[in-house]
Image (cartoon, rainbow, N blue to C red):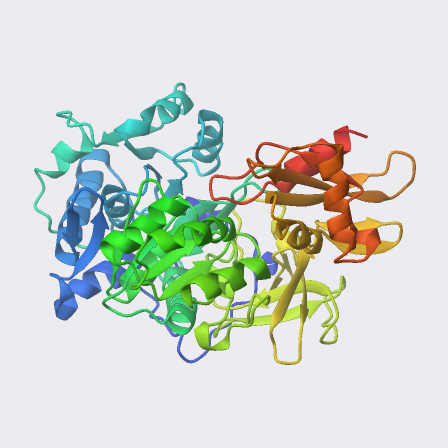
Length: 540
């Protein structure tokens, strides 16, 4: 491949051509061979005369225009090149809560032709160390308030230079950029130069490093952004996900900036924080997880949500019951979506006009989705099989043998079991590794979860397979978080089992129920079912 990068580390470690997914482009998705995503998302808005339009808001009265962000990003880019010797292709680790400065650093790295490696604020030193070594990072930009874990991760890594901001020190990044002009010539990166490395959230074990091109960032805006979100220039986006999670990057940066809209950045994005943000700032578009909508529903009556127009849910499948109660309360249909770090963002999901309660939606315009059997053959509609996807983005792991599991025959296999109806709507069944085989029955853990979550005393639930103590099979086990008012005990176990058996076939009801104070989750809110499966297995 052709690259404009001086440091070709990322391009040299792309999967072999036979392990790469097929890339599908329709007529709308034609990009020049040379393009810098930062210029397309940021400079383009200023060049079009929208420099005075607001682009970033934050609590405390912070309002940045597109021109403000361009100036600061240019100054950071100048500093990285002139003082830290950044050359195109170098990987730069970014560590901060969702703040304007983090966004400015992200744009600066791309402007200078660097590869952004944005991390979660709550990652610990061992996790950061893994990322630093995997991506061979030499420069890290970090909010001084969360410097401890990064400093610990870099203790004996002499090759890594850590630069801090937000502390007011003379040698901090803030002081250094103040001396710069704010004029910077963007590196003319190739469309297929790697722009970012995103680490998966670890729901299935060791995180994988997914690489995405500059072109990929544009493509997700021109597919999901344009056809499903349909954003307007006067929109204000807000959400709960960190920018280190590609769901958050899309919702906080890619989609609003592609439309010339604005984003409200919250360092804490809990359900009440989001409701307060909608009421106080006039947020129109919210990105968060299903569990947040369930909590927000109970509190929604205390806030003015009249400006809210678009609600996006991803990370886990949206329970139909949550969809229905949110619609009843607000009159808004939650846009369920299936995306992955490997694909960059959402590739299955329907706009408001096409939403069906309970369905994830149809393939986003620009993508092709099919349901396959284990041999990669398409199965008839209505048959459960492996979801297979092609489109303008696809999985490109950084030196990882798991590439050949995710990509087979040119198709991306995200690891989900689905069935497709005759209208092309996709109905989630389970993760392919969450399907429970018990006494010859195939049982969807999700189906059991959706029944249990409808019980008034159940706050959260995750269902996994547990090896049968005596037989070569599995039983259904549920880990349940009860509401504060409910009492755990044998009576509650029997009550929940009876509740299930009244609503689904008795063989699907959990044989075991364990009450826990919380479910293990990644920072992005996904339940780490692999940890629950490990726990269930050790109890054998």
